[in-house]
Every structure is written in structure tokens, then in C-alpha cells.
Image (cartoon, rainbow, N blue to C red; front, side, top):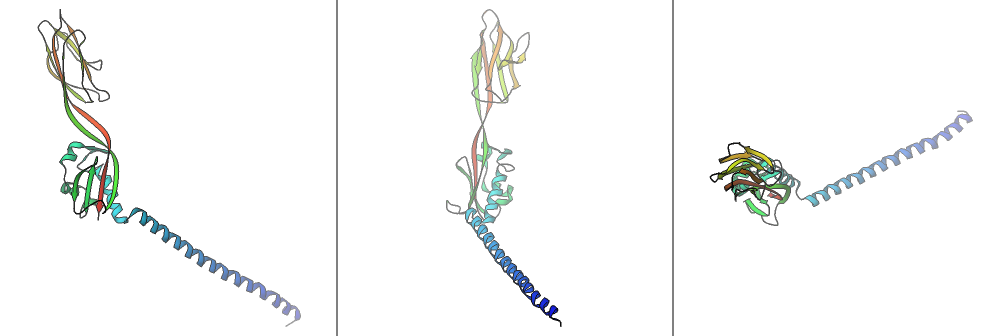
Length: 240
């Protein structure tokens, strides 16, 4: 072998060693990075578990809470529950309708009141999920006012339907009945008797009459089912 070739060989060897050293260093760095990343993911997962409790139990609670306010025996529409249905429900009915409640201990609270419970749920067991909803309730209301030249009466609350009983005295003709200044009944020869009219729920209804006669007299009775909706919360605790 010539001196030139030997010189070339000596010069080439350090380059190969440096390449091997670089690859070894890169491999070690990748192993360390993988170890650090894996440790970080494990720690993050553990932190999530610590923050949310048992994941399957949390999923059961969240699923049950969503179902309670959308498609349960309590709901009359998405995000609205009926106070009447809340008062009539029980744990068996809710468990039958909501898969997430089957085979678990649970407690359902609406507007701060426990409405259904099964098993040994207490304040220190289980996982809780809540949803904001509108609570719809109804009540009856009725007013009576005298017929005169400017007779009016107002109900306290919103409704979608009124029952109006017009009872004019002799010599009095009620030509029209209005609700919030909109004519809902009209008859030139006179409106008498009981009538049912649909009305807007955007305002409390004020009923008025347009009467004629020497001294208009008589009375009007208005009755309705008042609809009330207010915000509240539905809470479900599940111990799966």
C-alpha cells in the first residue's frame, strides 16, 4: 500500500468514529426524550384522574345529567323540565328511562330538592354532575271586573289561552273584547257568554271591553292557567 493510501486511511478513520459517536448520542437523546415524554403523559393522566375522580363514574354522571334535561320523564323540551313531572317522578322511572342510571346508586336533585334516590348515596360518595335548566310550573288565576265605560282587568302572569265570560247587564251591549289592546272578540249585536281565546305569552294579559248603553254595567270574568319559567339546576350524583 502506498503512503498516499495510508495517509488517506488515517485521515478517514476519525470521520467514521465521529459519525458513530454522533449516531450513538442521537439514539441516547431519543431514548431520554421518549422517557421524559412518557413520564409527562402519565403524570398528566394521573392529574386528570385526581381532578375528575373515577373516569367511568364521571362519564355516567355526565351522561345522566344530560339525559335528565333533554329526554327524560322530567323534560318537556331540551333544557326545560316540568315542575309537575318532577313532583311525580321516582327512582325506578328515571332508571328505566336513562341507561346511565341503570345498575347504579344515584340521587337526583332539582331546584335544591331531592326528587329521587336509590342506594346508599350520601354527601361523601359518588360523582356529581349538574346542568342549568328552566323549571316550568303552572298555576290557576282568575279575575272579575265590572263593565263600565273603560273597564279593564289584568292577570298576574303569562299564559297562552284565556277563558273569558262576558255577562252584561240589561241595556248593555259589549261590542268587543280586547287583550293587550288587540281585539279578540267582536260582534256588533253584542258579545255574551264564555269564550276561549289564544293569546301571546310575551306579556301579562290585560283584558278590556268596549261597551255601549245608557249606563254600561255587568261583569267580565277571566281565568287562565298561568305559565311560569325560571332558571334552576338539575344535579345527579352517581356511585357506579
